[in-house]
Length: 521
Image 1 (cartoon, rainbow, N blue to C red):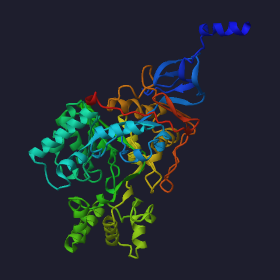
Image 2 (image 1 turned 90 degrees about the vertical axis):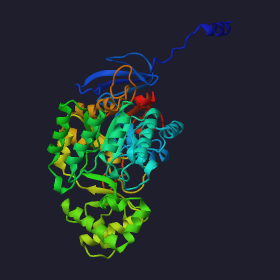
Image 3 (image 1 turned 120 degrees about the horizontal axis):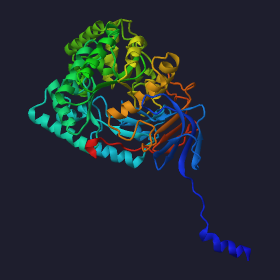
Image 4 (image 1 turned 180 degrees about the horizontal axis):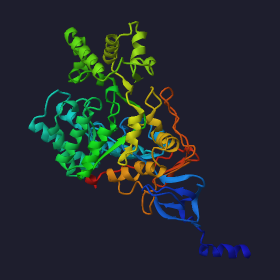
């Protein structure tokens, strides 16, 4: 009889359900605004932060004890190149283990040819990180003009502007240039201004890998600011640097230009990776004209004895202008034709080929590699004092200038350790900036610049992108010699309210989303 009574009462019994999806208790909150830390609990439900206060007593599906740990907004990497790697490794381990929950890709003038298709493909595979994208100038110019060394005709300019408008409507957050790369290197300022004006119609940002980061870096920064003024568009100077020995110590001069523009009311900001080495392709060591038309045209020039000599002459003149003694500063990151060269400098490879150690021979070695398909390089070309000077600037964001890694080659360690390196080296060890300030640069400053309205702060109603880490042990482990090493010290990472790093381990969850610009809404 008692058993029957129990079953009759079942419809009237209410089983308690968890109030929240995730409850983070006892953490030291650094909210992304730059304000000082405070203690509180954080409650997450349905992908959003729903409550921040002390001593939340409600139940949750997952309770995290963050005692002794920092609780901060997920980091936003403003300078990424994930167009290819993310489809090979959608879990994006190198970013997630570095505390990054959102990336801005499509930088340096290089984006997906079709952003709408790119976004749909991202949605279909699901990623562990959120992705926003710029539309690239080099991509647009190539689609309309190929890699030709000439100015755009009025009709071609209109066609490029139409592609910019299309991409902005599809959700791009802005427009990027890479004016040292094919084919953007052949554009003039007026062309870029026209495309930037089109971007501005859709409330986008102009992000520029400027025309030169070495001897004419000051002129190149001036050009980027002028483009912003002419187009009335916010400007982002990508991976700021004053590279090569001939320019070391010019960081105050560079920042003075940016600060002057800001004082005049123009929204000009910068980003940086915390290393003294850069990384890009081998082709930038050749004269621009030698690259026109693409790989086949370049090979014909190299194989023409007369033109070959002109290329070598230009290379050696560049080496002298930049005050390098030789090409030992240039290290191969990935040479597909012969991976045994990965990790070796041009000077070392030159000796391996049985040549004498002369700059002429080293230039010839570079041309050999170019004929074999080129290479991705690591260039040891910056000065630590300049890196530190830029790091102190309050309108400076953090961007790794990397991609989703796949364990191949000898890539720059920045792809693995950028944010952890800032927190370990420049906050904890050198005290160049405070922890609160570093997190502001990685979060709310980036979200504000790229208009990611619900990201970048720990605040009720915001998306629950959250990192929980140990400020005393967070560390970058990737080195130039052994780059394929994840950062450590991040105990938990949430992306859109779902745990992706749980107790220090990536759990395979892919809860990232495509984040679209204002023109795509």
